[in-house]
Image 1: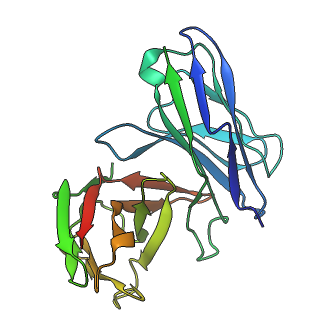
Image 2 (image 1 turned 45 degrees about the vertical axis):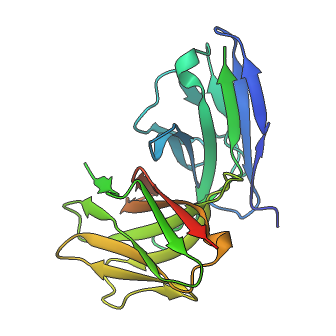
Length: 115
Length: 116
């Protein structure tokens, strides 16, 4: 059971480039989310998904796009990278609502540097 | 909107001693969960402890325990017998429960340094 996995671990981009951060989980969790972590701040929610085909915006969604075609995968796309998107990105997953087991489990993170 | 405040940016403690990290939150919700996560230098987010708001009993996990005061909206973490491996950033987080999922709101974190 690998839990939540993220690739790549580290990426350098030039301003204007696009890329996709990958996230996968093997716990059959319905809920998945993306956060960013900036210095001096806690994690902030970018986008989340409550199941395949269903996504919604979080606190800081601008410049990011998501889709969820399977339960296991939840990729995050940067459409046109900007230096302000330099951050550490975390993916998390959680069992469905109403189970009493609502806890978010995090991947190892992806460090992104935009020059 | 929910907010989470951790008023101690940094703390230090001697090995084997006890330390308490503070957290307050603001919400109008009645049913929610609260968490403490640990982030060591590896950056991995590790779940330390979880508290359901409807439970009056404070959660404990080995050397980690919480003091949950629902009326005061306070959720502090006590680490007993501190170990060098406890050195990390600690985040307090509020979980808003929704019909089909949940949302976490994090505090800014407290850096804890355990000294030998």
